[in-house]
Amino acid sequence: MKLRAAWDRMTLYLPILLMGLFALGTWWLVRNTPAAIEAISGKPVRHEADYFLRKFAIRTFDDQGRLKSEVFGTQAHHFPDTDTLEIEQVRMRSFSEEGRLTVATANRAISNADGTDVKLLGNVHVVRDPDQAAGAQKPPMEYRSEFLHALTKSDQLRSHLPVVISQGADRFSGDTMAYDNAGGVVELNGHVHGLLTPQKGR
Image (cartoon, rainbow, N blue to C red; front, side, top):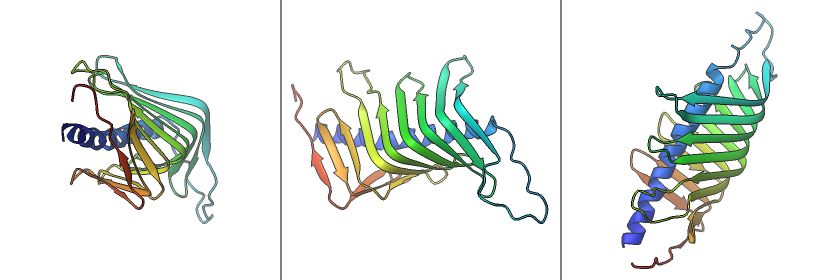
C-alpha cells in the first residue's frame, strides 16, 4: 500500500509541473518575439508564417537571477491567421524552487499566443528529477507518448494516443490519458497495464 500511495503521488505531481513548464516557456517565447504583422485590409489571411526563428533559445530567471526555464528549438514559425507558434525539435527545461529539473522534448510543439493551449507531437519524452530529500536514491520519473495536449487554464493534460509513465522498473501504460488537476486524478483508458516492483526494506 505504501508503494502504491507513493506512486500515486508521483504521477499526480508530474502533470501539474508539465502544464506550468509549457505555459511559462511558450508565453515567454511569444512575448520575446516580434509582434504579428497586421493583414492588409480586404486581403484574406492565408496560413503563412509572418516571422520565424532559427536555432533559438529563450531563458527566464527568478528575482535572484537563478535560471527558471529554457526553451530551445531548431526553428519556429508564427502563423497570424491562427495566432499560433510552431516549434521544431523543441526542448524545454524547468527548475522547481527546490532545484529539481524537468525536461520535455518532442519533434514539434504548437502553442497559442499565451501558452494556455500547447500540443507536443512526435517522440514526446518528459523526465523529472526525483525528490531526494528523504535520502533514498530514486530513478527519475518519465513520461512517453506520441502526443500530449496541455490546457493550462483548465489545468488539464490529455493524450488520445498510448502513453507510458515509468519510474525505474515501475511502469503504467494505457491507450489514452486524461488528467484533471481539479479532481487530482490521472485516468488511463483502453488497454491499461501496471507493474509495481517491491523495494528493498519494504
